[in-house]
Image 1 (tube, rainbow, N blue to C red):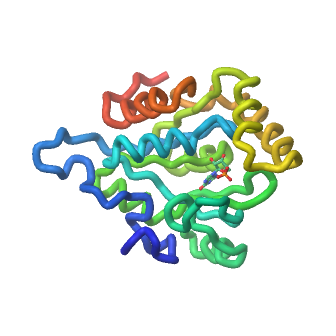
Image 2 (cartoon, protein in one colour):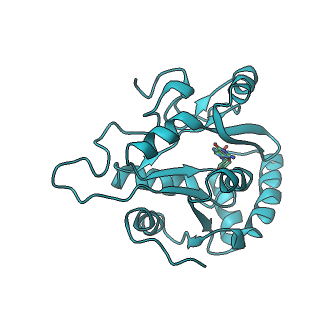
Length: 219
Ligand code: 5GP
């Protein structure tokens, strides 16, 4: 099924680029199957880092979340998110189709379709979820074997600069997101690893090294 299917629960390859899974390409180095949960405050660049991983490491499967928020210009259904109605989101919750979900920035609901994650891991892909802190905490409960990575801005001022520079939110939304960001920054110690996002490609490389390299020693 293609990534443009209208049903996130039935799209095992929703976040895949359609390339051969890691470990199954003849001659390629086998990679360890590992679930990475990437979280961090708003505007820190999680989406940009995830896009850089997608570009340079197509063997990494990245989950496509469902959300009730409206698409921004340029965002495509099934690629950036599954854009669903409140009723559709309710149905996904009721059927147990979501691995985790949360109301983010007091504005919209976001959730990770469970089936595609299970299939990606079963097929040996390194897999990644890019979700908020509330979602990361839920996954910690159900999949404690995942590696939890906190993406951090170089400084608070830089975070504010990135959020303002992005220009995709209204003033009120920005304030709400900064409020959430303050609380999220305080949660860094709950994570296994911190990556500082000085530069997007360097951060993406650090992230991929965690998926395909040796496991970091236990804290
Ligand atoms: P945005 O609206 O800017 O795309 O995303 C807003 C926030 O929602 C980001 O912090 C992002 O990490 C989070 N988010 C995206 N997908 C999910 C998801 O499936 N679950 C949870 N809990 N948060 C998500």
